[in-house]
Every structure is written in C-alpha cells, then in structure tokens.
Length: 120
Image (cartoon, rainbow, N blue to C red):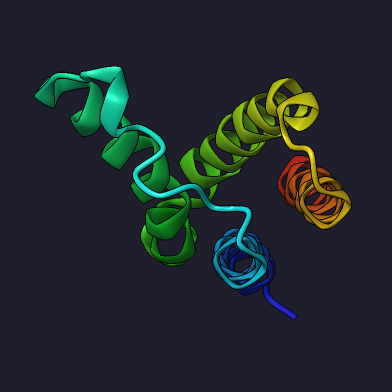
C-alpha cells in the first residue's frame, strides 16, 4: 500500500481517538461544564487552541498532496510534537480510559513516525 495513504490513515485514527475521548468524557460526566470559562483566556489563546487541534485534521489531507520529501519530514515533526504534547498531558487526566486512549494515540504517533522515517 502507498505510504502516503498509510500516513493519512494514521492521522484519521489519531483524530477519531481524540473525538472518542471527548465523547467518553461527556457521557461519563467527567467533562466539567465550561472548564475553561473561568480562566479568562483571550482570543489569541483560543486561536492557538484552534490551530493546535486543526493540525491533526489537516494531516489527514496533507500527506496525500505534499511532495514525498516534504511530507516525510512534516509527518515526523508533527507526530513527534503530538507524542510529546500527549506525554506531558498524560498525568493531568484522572480517568483510566483517558490514559489508555492517550497511550494508544501515542502509539499511532510512533507508527506515523516509523512509516514516514522509512518512506523511500
């Protein structure tokens, strides 16, 4: 199978895991009402959060259209960033299902890096 399709698929899995975690937090009652509303964040912080969460969504599309040499490094860098981001955030989640989903997500980040690294 073509590597760019595999890379795109790994990002689909990553996004579905993020969404599934959100659904479980809502259904379990672990999601507090307006948890960030009291933090008084400005529009630039919200823009940063939007860019952060839009990145894996764009990574579903970008490996399919970028040149191989660029796509390879973009996938490695972005997957490594999200691996570290999730690793740092892992202790902040109290529920076992969140920790499990983040661990699986980080596993797919490693798979993404591996496929991109070995792409010739």
